[in-house]
Image (cartoon, rainbow, N blue to C red; front, side, top):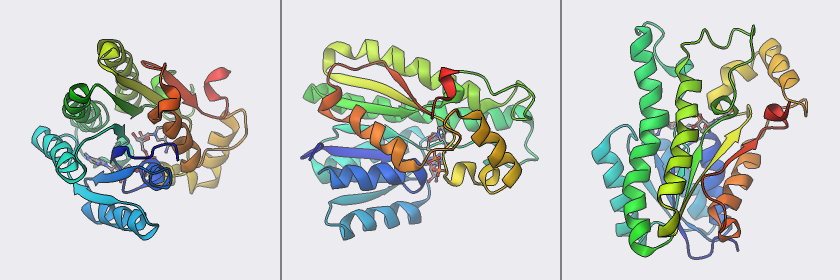
Length: 257
Ligand SMILES: NC(=O)c1ccc[n+]([C@@H]2O[C@H](COP(=O)([O-])OP(=O)(O)OC[C@H]3O[C@@H](n4cnc5c(N)ncnc54)[C@H](O)[C@@H]3O)[C@@H](O)[C@H]2O)c1
């Protein structure tokens, strides 16, 4: 087992990539703190981990709220004694922000969840990791943190906060990776291509937009959450002991073109 005895706190674990990480990491021997702003989904995923013979706690909290981030880390430590792994998978796109909000308020909402939320969770988790002299943080960035949206596809007008937030996550990963390098705490990011989850459902349910997205990926298909979780497992594990500040595309070749 690749995570035997480790404690993994996973935000956004109620759906998609975070859920896949929770189930996979538990199979690999980790104890799971399944966190989500949607408490029902956190409870459901923690229940699935336990039904499969694993050890889990469900945490309800909003990653944009500093005191809730602190509490989620404290509850993890209270239950399992420490936190070895943090997966920052909580994330939103502007598609899930009320359409009638002014553009700057939409921007704030997306930046707050995707960038500030990852920073806040890392702040509190890294305190504990530094104390114990080891830890691994994996941020869910995106291909759209490495390159812009493709031109002429109607995906951005230049004010889409999603690429702005994910570019910030990439740079935050590098900065924390360097800053924590001598403390035993590694910080890396995954940059997934488009994958089938609730986040992309409105695009992937539509034949035209799914075909368009598939054609943008050299492999000619979109990813599955488990394919992203497998890469997260590697970065979270001791197999990645000499890797920090790295941003790994998991994208069917998208950013190689
Ligand atoms: N699916 C993709 O194509 C794709 C591609 C690149 C990057 N990503 C990134 O991967 C991460 C996971 O995405 P996903 O596709 O699994 O999405 P998802 O919508 O399936 O899951 C996201 C989870 O985050 C939770 N969440 C949202 N706001 C929150 C908040 N304020 N506090 C706590 N939890 C909150 C949601 O309740 C949900 O359970 C996101 O950061 C996303 O931007 C996804």
